[in-house]
Image (cartoon, rainbow, N blue to C red; front, side, top):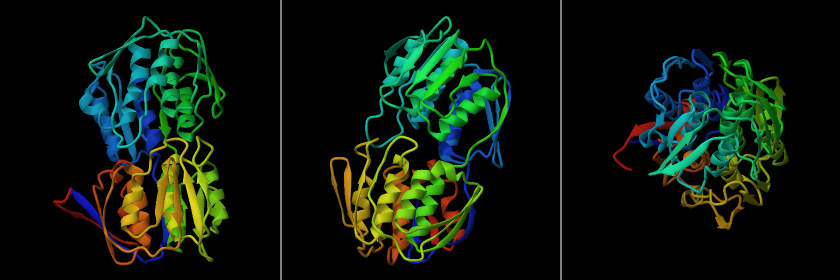
Length: 420
């Protein structure tokens, strides 16, 4: 096991590059199952989740190899249509292989997913959508068993906007017979990135980036090369780290448009920005003022930055509320932040934060990916030394985060530990 030791109190200064988007990569990789051939996915981050997906793909007979930041994928010789529990349990995005296996081969056996320590995240929308496209699906011993002679186009409407369900239905629709209409589709940049990759593979999709997608199914697609978009959640995390520490940080390889809601809230809190193309410079000359946020599906404030904003408000003047309307019980970071001296109370799906409390180093434990990031942010401003345990969570979604923070002047180290 490993842990981080963080000695707080240093303003972050300097320039770093933002890595490719984890959540985009996890959709682009299974897309290669739709057509045999060789793919080069550049700007792929070197993350635990990417390796988990690569191992799952390897179990299906797909060769994956990451060189520098380019993932080489060869899907020419798929040998299995079963995604076993041993792989899928580690990460919910593994369920993305259901759509392409069913669309291309007419059959799939995929374990029900795991991979999160909080909240129900059902796959009902995936299953209902694929059934609407003509699949026969049943559940047996923890597996989804799906079959079809060929998927057929239809109108799939989501009662709740869902990134995962939109991804799987897109996978099915691009090889279905006839036209599919997907309404209340997710518009997150990662979904848009996938749709553009599918178009590069020969798919015909209208309405990309909107809640209504019209797909003309094709008999076959072809391999392509694609560059993964920047990770907006990593970028948002570093923007908040700079703001909290009173630093002056420049992020390169960003898409500021993907961060519109986050930048707007940070500006309200007193953060100053200098944005030039794909570069964002951030500083906080007059400190932070407390601001309320409510998470929402894109283009709203992302739930994946809720924990980080909670940490950010700890150093703000005044009180703030953080309400999560996407995942109501995503607040397991709060007890750990309180161990550092934070003053936070949670009522239903809202955290009430009293800013300005002096934080002091302590031993804390990561409970999930984004909670881990919030603990690092708080540790950067806490007095003394903070030990953060179970940092394997952070490695799922942040590429070498301690190295990037050290480049900005943070005192953070990764050390071996027997603690769990």
